[in-house]
Length: 295
Ligand code: 13P
Image 1 (tube, rainbow, N blue to C red):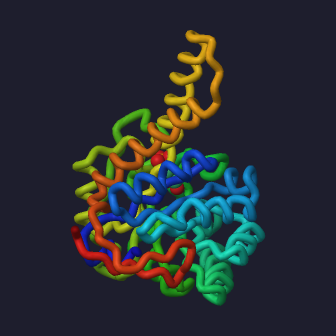
Image 2 (image 1 turned 90 degrees about the vertical axis):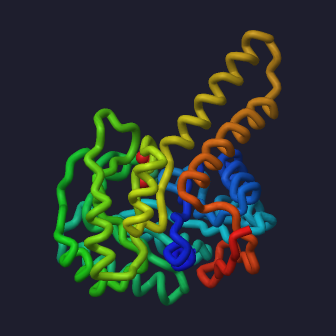
């Protein structure tokens, strides 16, 4: 999926889901707009639902999508949970080594990559920290930061498939204007063809996404925007239930799914990811190939 996005100048939306409603909304938007997508779960969500149930929910929801959909574990510093999702057949994991010093980050990432690759699973690597706490993981200050040369040296030593460098974005809502660093993507891309991931997608504009994609970003993570869409639509629906004194849970479910699907659709459009006539789609499989043509 990453290679296809690199070749065709778009970014694959990587969307954090929290339950069956948000999962179905992501799949519905992907199907409607003919866009490959990555379904992501935070460690908190994976633990809350449980790896077995989440895997089955994903397999069932994505089966009829008609586009490639991958299942990815977001920001995980816990090698035990990584082993669990690798064994359950997830497509990829982000080993979060951003709290570790360089040498230990390289050693531990190498260990995760060896294990994941032996099972046909890809690894996204984060050794610099992306500012902001997401579902209990991360830090509000920049602790580790390296030159593009050191980042690529680490990628070569670890064999990681995707790189998640610090690009001036933050997880969560922006409280002040970020200083974005698309030129850093250029600098890293000059040294490696490993796909580069943009974290902290919530709150950026279409122009800012385009600048990053033109610089060579091929996966963009969005979480907070979906959570806001989810909770905002739930609140509105509950207020209507209270006002009319009509308490029908499926009405709430529909409101949430519709709202999250629309939010996902807006991001698919901004990332230029939709409109593929897909020849082959394989969900939850590291061997799934994206071989589409623009419709
Ligand atoms: P946002 O919550 O800022 O969209 O960031 C998502 C993310 O990067 C998940 O890894």
